[in-house]
Image 1 (cartoon, rainbow, N blue to C red):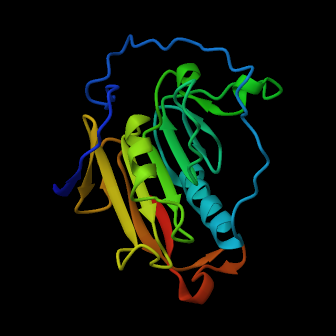
Image 2: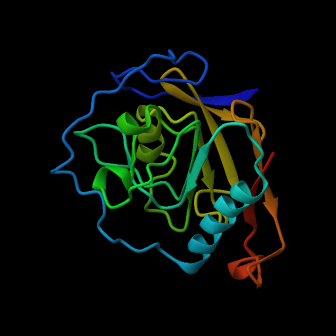
Length: 212
């Protein structure tokens, strides 16, 4: 099922959907000194459109008996002393989004509040400085995200457009295909019209969509 394993040197244990105890509890830290919103804009129009394409297909087509959250460009907080991650797209199954968004603790994805890490994080590569295959890959492993997807439409990191990794203990294993069995979803390259825009993208760039 896998082609290569990325070693991650971390001390804290990770979780996978298969072995996480059902009664796992998270301590609630004080977030009064945490910056949850810095109003940093998305980096370009293509990334913004691609983020909405991915989340829209999930909410319009994904049929599941459990509640889920699919969001774009929102903070993922997984440790009080760790800086947050901000995946381009995040998917978490079996969580309920708090209704009162006037409260700061309800406006980001705090692992200790949601009760679990998300299942999927997707990063869209637009340049070579994001370190998606280096430190960022390691950070998502520490955050215990089951699947980490790197979408590189401009081939900034090589000839592979989509890379999918699955967490096994403290390491990511690169998958041979783009199906994510623990969530029952897959990813594919797509061309079409989305919100009136011919989504071949900038300079003939392909687009990524999620299917089930």
